[in-house]
Length: 99
Image (cartoon, rainbow, N blue to C red):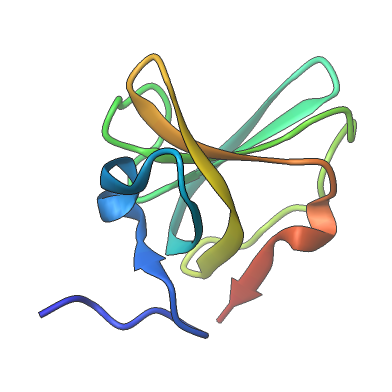
């Protein structure tokens, strides 16, 4: 039975199977990172684990820190980058955090 996600959607570890489709993806926060002005939010497993799900927010500089132990959700087109399932966002407001 599939794990129920806040507000519906699919689990982070199922996302790769939905590559090329628009989905709402949720999972436990595993870590965050940044490169230049781009921010990466990793769900399920942290970077560099290739089994992680990654939310990429382009050109934002930084995000407010996200506490550990939360569930993070977002929606968008799932793509694969070097085998890692991800959703690319233009705005951090599209990231939802559940305690």
